[in-house]
Every structure is written in structure tokens, then in C-alpha cells.
Amino acid sequence: MVFLLAGFTGLLIAMLACARTPQSSSSSFWSVSHQGMLPAATAVTVESTTQAWGLPTRRAPNAPILTPTPDAQHTLPALRTKQDQYAVQYGDTLALIANRYGISVEQLTHVNKLTNADILEVGQVLTIPVPTPEGMGPDFKIIPDSELVNGPVNILFDMEKFVNDQGGYLASYNEQVNEQTLTGAQIVRLIAQDYSVSPRLLLAVLQHQSGWVAGPKPKKQVLDYPIGLLDPTRKGLYRQLAWAANNLNRGFYLWRINGIATWLLADGSIVPIAPTINAGTAGVQQLYATLYDRSSWEKAVSPEGFYATYNALFGFPFDYAIEPSLPPNLTQPPLQLPFEQGAVWSFTGGPHAGWADGSAWAALDFAPPGEAMGCVISDAWVVAMADGLIVRTGMGEVMQDLDGDGFEQTGWTLLYMHIDTRGRVKPGTYLKAGEHIGHPSCEGGVSNGTHTHVARRYNGEWIPADQGIPFVLDGWVSLGVGKEYDGYLQLGDTRIEAYGGNSPDNHIQR
Image (tube, rainbow, N blue to C red; front, side, top):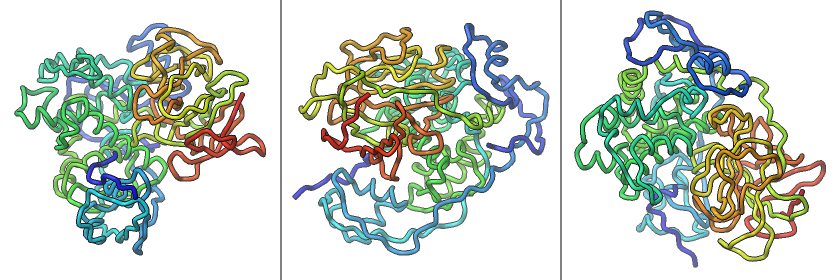
């Protein structure tokens, strides 16, 4: 009999309609400009970058602020009208199950008369109650889609200077992260890079929740929990901000695929989502849904809430909009499988989250040859899937920029994860497709076996491996089945199913 701990979480706009009164701000003013394919650049200045990459151009300080029009109405999933049954699987927690069905843990505990909500038995059948939604959520648009991701506009943002100029507590803060002492600005930058969430957005959330950016040293509880999530396992700026970034991503990417119809608020309220909001706004609404009851949530996502804080720090958020955030008819460049010619690897993970469980299902997993299971040392090589510049390495991660401009916020980029420090490529190296990235391992993130995890981004946005822009590797096309980590690679009439082990059925070679 197997038991699971269940008490902890396992876890384009038709722009520019009515004019509004200009709002004063010390920030730069921008206007909307179409974002096309991004050419390489040799120097970064406001003028050259704006012209070369099609970034928003400066708006005159006294020009009217234009209100974004609503998005086209989204087709949302239908709400359940009948009870459901669910058999507990290995790895489940009560919180994960409740979140999957859009109900509260308390509802799930009550309906199933669970005497100990911290214990679940594998195979145990739970009754899933019918959700009881309340009134429609607000349709106020808070930020543009391009301002949620760590995209092209952010290459011009000098975060360290901004943080220091604000003179708040964040400017003097430091914390131990992965055995390194990082400043507050460095932590924000790290989270922005890893989760690919706009650093301006993260700073505005931090300011709204705790006043860290432009305020004095906070009281103890705010010092420990600056985002407001009172979880002892999420203490400190790094963990709090990582949790916030993950939830911003969760709302954004679920809305992108019409994958969610309601928000579950912290008090158990179920709120139908206004169908004309945009994905960026959905990300903000999701974050605050996890923190607040109905009245507090509505205030946070109103013009007087988070939006007002953002506007005070950076100006009107839609002045930073790049629309559409992904160019029409975007296609993936040619990519090859991430291992050497003739080597037989295993396809171990179908479409799943690119970074943490809130991001798009942008990733695929491959394990190296060998019968040994678990986290073992491998001498096999992970190789570059395309030509490109290595712009960053970290805890198991390698980021490759395919357009060669040196910025992971622009154009196509590839993430290689769980790459061993031993023999790993150095930042600044330009690789041709097939040249060595490093050895697969368990380093970085969460892994129960040696493998590599590969994912795509464009203009900072995670590109799903199971949606409209096919993930193609040497002609093999990724196909999802609606279940994370499950899926297929298909080449002509040949189809390989992902399997979390080593079997002839999931072997693949170049």
C-alpha cells in the first residue's frame, strides 16, 4: 500500500481605441509598433534597438493615453455540471487534485469526509464536487501580453540602476541563493530569466505587495513573505518571487490555449473569467486569485490596485506593448535531435512545462543510452539542436540564442536543462548544430533520473510543444495527448510514445 503526503502544494489585442487623460510619470513613454522577425544587432541603444527590432517608439509626454480595446471573446471550457470520480495516482496531492478540477481543498476534504487531509492512498477514489461559480470577474485590462514575458523591450531596462534610484529596501537586500550571495536586483533578474517573466512586472508586484522597491525596511512578516504567501517553505525573496512568477505564467499560458474558465480564489470562491480579457491580464488575475478573497481580489485587479502601482513605477503599461507579441505565421527554424549521430536515446517525456509547472508545455525529455536507472553519471553528449550563441549557463541550464544578437529576450532561443557542470559549454561560445552542449545529468531543477530537457522560446514566450507551432526535431513532430509528460514523436508513419524509462518502444536515434 502506497501513501502520499497531500497537505502541501506540489506545486492580439485590437489596440488603441478611446483616448484618456495623460498620466504623469517619470518613466519613458512609448507607443505601439508591430513586432516582426528580429535581425541581429551589434550595439544596444534606445534609437538603434527601437529601429532595428521594431520595439515600441517613444510617445510624447503630453500625448493622450489610449485605452486598449477588448480582446475577441475567448471560447472557454464548459463548467462541469455533474460530480466526477478520480482515482488517486502516484505523485498526487490533495491540493494538486483540487487545483486540477478548479475547486478548493476544503470542498474536496468535506465531500469525501477525509479525516486526515494529509494522507491519500494510491488508487483511492475521490468524489469531485460540482463547482459553484459566483458572479463574472472584471474585464479591466491590466497589462499587454508582451509585458508579462521577458521579451524584447526588457533589453533596454537597466534594472540595477532603477532599483538603486528608487532607494527602497530592495536596493540594500541580499540573500543566499544556490550557495551564492545575490542582491535584490540580481534575484529579480534571475527569476525573470529562468521563468521568462518581465522584470518590470515582478518589481511592480513586489512593490504592490510589500513596498520593497520604493519603501523602507519592512516589518518581520513582510520581510519573510514579501509577496504575501504565508508558506514557511517559500520564505525569502527568491522563493516568494519564484512562486509569483510561476503563477503569473500559469494564468497567461492557460488563457493562451483557452484552458481555463474560472479562477479559484484563496477563500474558495470560484469566479468565472471575463472572456474578453487578454493573456497578460489573465496572468495578473491568476496571481492575485491565489492570495485574496473576492473583495480583496477585485480591488487588486482593478484600476486602483496593482495597475496603479505599475503605473506609478513605469507609466502606462500598454505603452510597452508589442502587438502581436508573436508574429503572424511564425514558424520554427530547422532543429535536430539533441544527441549525436547514431546514438540511441530514450524519449522519456512528452510535452510538459518549460520551467516549473506554471509555464507552457514547451519541453520534451530525452535520456541517454544505458541500462542504469536514477541519477547516474553519463558520458553521452547533449548537442546543439541548431546554430547559435550560448548566452547563459546556470544550475543545470544552458540557454542558446539562435539569432546571434546575444539576447535571450529576442527571437528564437533554446533551453537545454539538466546539463552536467562537467564538460559544459561556456557562455559566449558560438556552436554549430551537432556540437557539444554537455553531458545529461540530474543537475538543476527536479529530476529522478539522468536526462536532458529541451524547450523553445520566441521573444521570451514559451512555445508549447503540443499546439500551433509544431516542435520538429529531425523531422520528428511532437504530438500531445492532453496529459503532461505523455505524448508522441511522429515521423511519417512511425510513432514513438514517451515513457519514463528505457525500452525498445521509446528508443530514438539520429
